[in-house]
Amino acid sequence: MLSSKIKKLQYEPIGLVEGISRNLMHAILNGVLKGGEQLIEAELQEIFSVSKSPVREALRDLESKGLVEIRPRKGAFVKPITRADIVENYKVRAVLEALAVREAYEKMGEDDFEKMKATLDKMVVSAKNKKYREYFDYDHEFHKIYLDACQNTLLIKLVRRLRIHNLWYNFDHEYYKRNFDLAEDVKPHVKLVEALQNKKITGKKIEEMMREMIEKALQNFLYYVSDKT
Image (cartoon, rainbow, N blue to C red):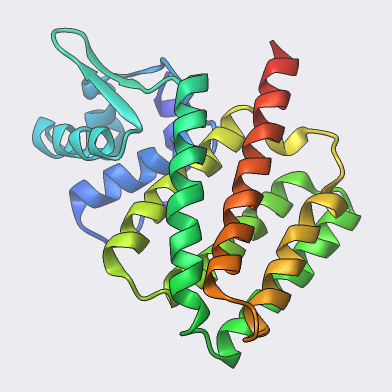
């Protein structure tokens, strides 16, 4: 029953449709609602105490975000994650995030670097304590800092969606439980911060570093997924 999964989510004082959409998205991204699971409108109406209209609008919003599939005469379902989805996500992110970090390179100030260092410190501690899920949460926060600093509105919007999907893939596959060397994984992040602060390095080199980081992450993820099946 959907009610047993969704009722525990926190409600926020925002627009009705956005509130429903955000709560369902939270459940999907955190693996509470699994790929292929049907989102029954009547149940959602009862859970959120609303009519059909805001539920349908929220489901269409989630469909536009690539999290839900609306099948004619069948209903709405949480989108199953495929290997192709993972590959496409990482390949596109490698290009767009590389562009974002290159644009951020000339714009980042000391406040941005301090935030990155503070987040990096948290990643290092999580890696040391082998807190995998916590590590990925901080990793997501780390990348958000230079993304916001690039000041390219369209680029930020596109990459944010891709990174949300990436976090979804991690949690859906329970990738955060993988027993791999987080201390090794954090090293490219350390090098990236050092490079961003070194104004003698070219923007092209910064771009290459980010692309290589994400391409390596794709190889690791695919190896993990293949090892599970």
